[in-house]
Image (tube, rainbow, N blue to C red; front, side):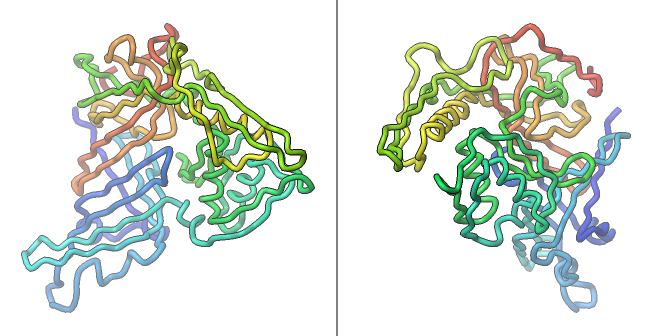
Amino acid sequence: MPVATTYSLAIGGRAAPPELLAAIRQIEVEDHAQMADMLRIKLAVAVREDGGGWTVLDDGPFTRLAKLRVTVTVGSGAAMPLIEAYVIDVDTNFSSHPGSSELSITAMDPTVLMHLAEKVKSWPNMKDSDVASAIFSDQAYGFSPIVESTNLSRQEDDHTLVQRGTDIQFLQQLADRNGYECFVTLNDDGVVEGHFHPPKPEGQPQGTLSVNMGSATNVDKFRVRYDMLGPAVAKAATIDPADAAKQTGAATDPARTNDMGDEPATPAERPRQVLLSQHGAARSGEVQQLAQAVVDRSSWSIAAEGEINTVAFAKILRAKQPVMVRGVGQQFSGRYYVERVLHTISGDGAWIQKFTLRRNATGLTKRENFRDDDAIAS
């Protein structure tokens, strides 16, 4: 029996009126681990019957930075918030052909609020993670910080951390040099969280994607690519401004073994080596940290993409969380980290989920649990 999928749209905290919902042709939500989440809505617009303006458009619901929230329900499950976003672009295509005029709305997740003001600000005596906690908790945002501690603390009499740019630009720079992710997301309880931590593929998988598994199949398309030439060794050097001593750092293995497979995806023999330059680091600890971040990012060299049969999967696939994959051979079956999901919902509720996955190992650990009790076809 087909599973019904429904959605609701709130504008400024209030449910969208029925006439606006009836005009929706498509809703597209892009959930991404590396970039801001985006919401795009296409609506039909037309000249009003009395000729006194345009439907939807002249009602003016989509003002600058208007807060939108999309909530979805799969089958008899609970309603789940899919995205909270703020309007950043309105594009109207007027046509002389009846039924062809269209209003396109683009909205960005709450990181847009962190990108409105460039700043020059010092952060003395603080670790990068302390800065992330302070910015996410700022009353201007009020996000719930989900932050993992970093190692280095820079003292004011030695080195002062200075922000030049918007809050989100600054946090992304700090995340990049630590090999961390930095993103803002809406959790299942509807609370906006600010995240600053390494990728977390080791948690409870959100389900199992089954490829070519007969009646258990819930994936319509699946493609996997293995980039075997990423940097497996990174080296860097700098001069300490205090005493002109040479500071070096090198990384030859990923810092985190996420137990995603039997063999690391990075090569042990004849590895590719890179020399980092123009990095701005001043201490050996910072240089080592940068080199390690490069190797860690490079280790995620297996990428898969495909399309879910939402009726068979019967749930929402989320980016920034792990998922199991089976049916794609011994080398590529196993645990993956979801990097991106593109949700496309038509006005009548038809729902397509396209995904991109990452993995830093090959083979099976023999400890995988591919059981998915929530899936229809399990």
